[in-house]
Image 1 (cartoon, rainbow, N blue to C red):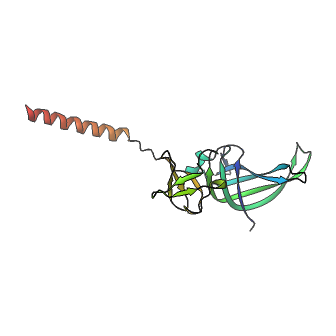
Image 2 (cartoon, rainbow, N blue to C red):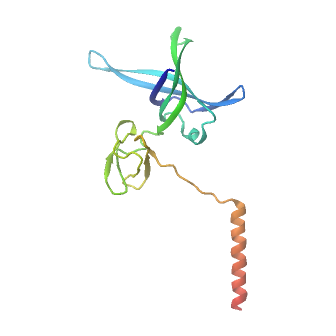
Image 3 (tube, one colour):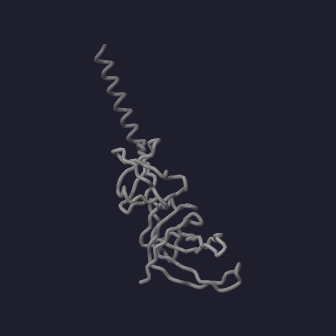
Length: 188
């Protein structure tokens, strides 16, 4: 088995596709590296990796948007295709993702200095990694919550929104109205 781990940015929003009755998520991950030339200047080299995830992406799908930084691990396959731009056959990498983690959805999502519950400062480094706060909830100076997973990757904490169903709200209102009416009759 060929195993590949890549950290990169998504080149487009993830798409859910269906083929032969099976759903999968299609991604394009850019692995960009800076290479120093002899004259001291830098060139950026980008390797585009075509990737898929079995299933519909679940809760992670809304966050897999263009520019999001991800860490993906899976089985790789090298394929050749004809590039119209280069007018030649080129090699491409296909990744069948087995494990994917969201590192960040926006460059400014994670401040460089965060604090744990005890007020201890933790520095968040390159790629939003913090090895001193693995598995902890962290807070910014303005009180925004962040989560450091067991591996040390820091992301904004998910926001849980509870929405009451219309039936529950109606039942509570009806019960409160009945209680109010009962209290009014008792006072008379």
